[in-house]
Amino acid sequence: EAAARRFLLARPQIPKEARDAIVATNTRPRIIHANEGTVIILREVNAAPGADPADMISVRIWLDKACVISARMRPLAATDALRLDLVKGEGPVSPADVVVRIAANMTAGKEDAVEELAEALDDLEDRTHRGNVDLGTELSAMRARMSRLRRFFQPQRAALTALAAPDSKLAAAERTRLTEIADTMTHALEELESLRERGAVLQDELVATAAL
Image: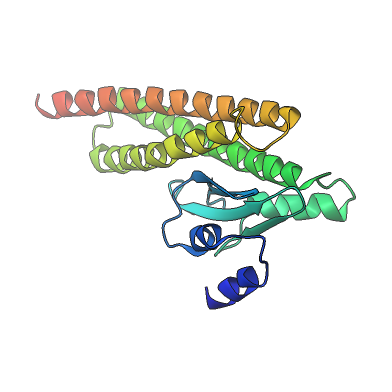
């Protein structure tokens, strides 16, 4: 954190409010407009093998017309993918395009996490219907992961929606792309809500069967 603060202090165009937000412990997704720039804090699903799908990694971004600066505490798949694009000569064309691409990469990870949960719930339902009723602990853990994901998804969608708003400092084309990304987040949230409802129904079935 000390090194990050020194780096930010060396850039006078970044106001204190923005510097503090970038290095803050609280990394809840949000948008902060400060002077001529914007602080953008987003989260990504941890894509490491075996990682809990509810484990999130944050990226903190300063964006203005001339530059974009990002910071993270752990490896981030969304920025790694962007780095590969740069190596291939297919990188962003503007500072704002960096943010849009990071947001798109992060959203793709969230859809994957919901899909993995859906497949796991399908398996639990199949096993239950085949007569295996000793699944309460496994289902409870799955429902807990769903709840944690939901708590992260909602502020992420809100941050993306705010960034795509007409009063943001982005161009219309970039706002349109961010609106599409926010819509994808909305769809992921709706799918997650459906999974939570199915999980509750399955929990009731297990309880009813165990009581027989």
